[in-house]
Image (cartoon, one colour):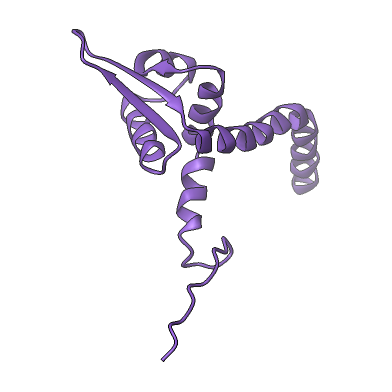
Length: 126
């Protein structure tokens, strides 16, 4: 009896686990955390200030998820008060470079997107 080979990852397949990882990396806060950590390591409070609008709860969840997926290092120093630094793993750096490219593209193309939205809304209003 031959053993069936596992299917290769395919993000378009509904049951593919890569979808979950893609969701983690491309989530609103996931992209911003990865992008910020491309610059340097951050402490939790520094990272929260760097990423405007993120709640403590969402930042903590995002950091834990990205650490679990192997994208972040969490370095807890045994000092008082506690100090925890977050940095990218090699795989995290690779992912961060990919999503940061997309984020920069969105920033550059924002005027065209806004123009397209205006034209769409104007056509729908007519």
